Image (cartoon, rainbow, N blue to C red; front, side):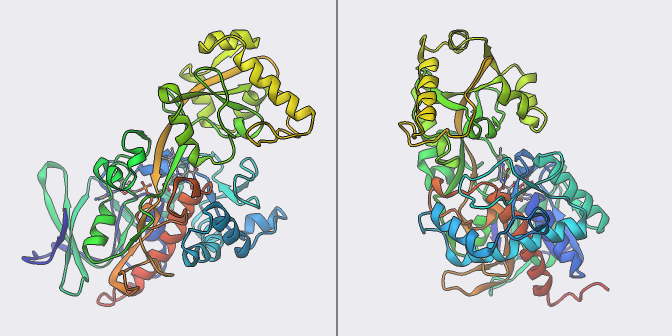
Length: 471
Ligand SMILES: Cc1cc2nc3c(=O)[nH]c(=O)nc-3n(C[C@H](O)[C@H](O)[C@H](O)COP(=O)(O)OP(=O)(O)OC[C@H]3O[C@@H](n4cnc5c(N)ncnc54)[C@H](O)[C@@H]3O)c2cc1C
């Protein structure tokens, strides 16, 4: 795996723009390159495109969209940049944050209006670092649907997605211009594809244990709950070509992965008044202070697990909207009790502990103060029977470091000059989460995928100067 500069074979066929990876980034890039009149081929290692995109909740943040305006939500790039800088304690790349602030809205509008990918404004995930409602979600509210919508859009645009096509190497000349790709197909067949430009949409490196150990040692032994194809290939090729990387220590984590069922417990259960308690029945953190960073305190609890505690009212409200909540029911992950004592018994936590935590929350609420972790439950109805709990653990979802790109998603060298014909987006590019787990703003992952994807595809279309644009 790497860059091959010598003994470059005859290419069996050539394409204007080769996109590596058929997740949200790659498919969006393909649409943009096709819109610019280029012939595009998407190469995907799996038999069926899936990626972290399908595993996601499908929520994409976008700033200043038509959907926001239609709902009377005022948003602007400055507010988004301020939110990013507040969340990352000023450590995100400001130029990148400004780029995403400016381009995410037009990207979501373009996907919706031109490519039939409906993204509806969502009000369920409020706050959590976003000062305005700016999360957009497909009607079915999941990432699998989002990927399906993008695949359909590519189909309509005449874009071919070649599956079971694992790109192993890039062929490049002495000036670091990519000339083509080496592709492994089933049965050991190797093909060579020439191209005018390449989009790296191979996502991050969460599935590459050696890279995680090197860059994010705190998660080296944690569960990885992203797509196993996220091996860091694009980042490694970009680096080998002389590209710069940034924020390699950053990642999106989550402290609420159902254990052992591996289903993401819907966050609105906590937002709307639920709490987290450890295996000894004690709360240990402000549940909403940092969704991504919550994996760290959860993993630090006895056994690396905790309970998400909520009630029947929250459960019933969640079921219609959440595939995950329905799945949790189907697989029997929910513990239930008509009293706190019953729930404590069902969860095998010491008697009286959940009840005491709930009573402390009620006391804080009725006295109008914050609880001992600084969380306010004001305006939220008290939990009422029946009570529910799901056991959860912390996991690494998605790495946030990657290739440094410019305003056109072109991969940059350390001195700021772009590589000749290579662009990157999504998990393969540096994000706007700063260097730590605490900097991840909800729905930024897919935002980086589609926004940089659009820019990367459009730039790749411009960069393949040798190949004339199709009529
Ligand atoms: C459980 C979970 C929930 C999440 N929820 C959200 C959410 O609601 N909102 C949000 O914004 N973000 C969310 N994220 C993060 C989000 O999923 C990612 O940021 C986003 O999917 C990245 O898109 P991508 O196109 O870069 O990568 P992917 O969707 O992973 O696509 C990359 C593709 O490249 C392919 N590939 C890799 N290497 C090669 C190769 N050498 N040759 C050919 N193909 C290759 C892979 O097989 C894969 O299909 C979530 C992540 C997880 C794991």
